[in-house]
Image (cartoon, rainbow, N blue to C red; front, side, top):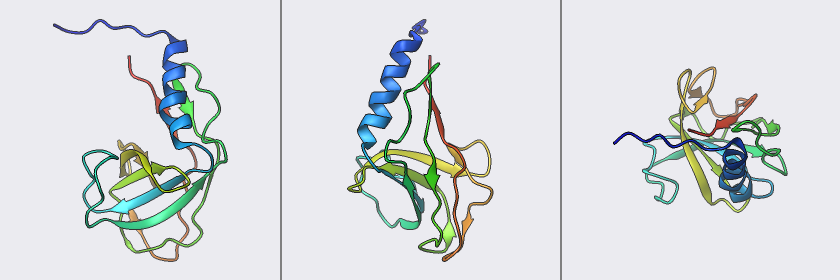
Length: 135
């Protein structure tokens, strides 16, 4: 049977805030990797290379509104760690615990970059990041 579940905006917002802002905590990180994306953030990385690491704001995002969570500013990585093709990203706590993984591409991905080819020493920037609640 198809679901007809409808969720109030206040519940969507609370869920986004808890699922992302609270889970990531203070001064989290955004890491961009090459290699195969793990099944989920609880699955250990295997053969992945960190291409870039960007600092999230002290508070990841202001409170969600209308079922959309918009990240505060993300500090560019002024010198990428390694050269490779970006395939996925993680949002991590300041201590490096992965909380969210997503795909990377140039369009239609969870994180869209102007190019997935990252070169060691080059600047890597993310101008905005939004997460939208389903239902």
